[in-house]
Length: 119
Image (cartoon, rainbow, N blue to C red; front, side, top):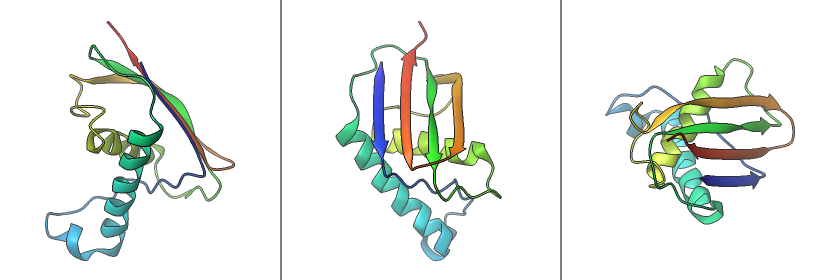
């Protein structure tokens, strides 16, 4: 099982981008910078290891400045991408990550995330 709890976190929801766009679109650049920061936080604050796949993702994300026009699954996708970038998950495909229970709420910035082995 892998566990991470981070306070004072900022998560930028997933941004669709082209190969070229990630170098020129301001939102895409900000998203990629946030991914690098999240990956670093996961490596520093994460506890435990994953020995068997698939895993389920359980937890919550609270954000003070929650963007009400962003889909909650875009926040989840941003966290999944950061887990892959940190090397905690080999990929965010169904082979490694199968469901779970995750919520995005308004509140003081905080993330609690568990990756629990299914088998």
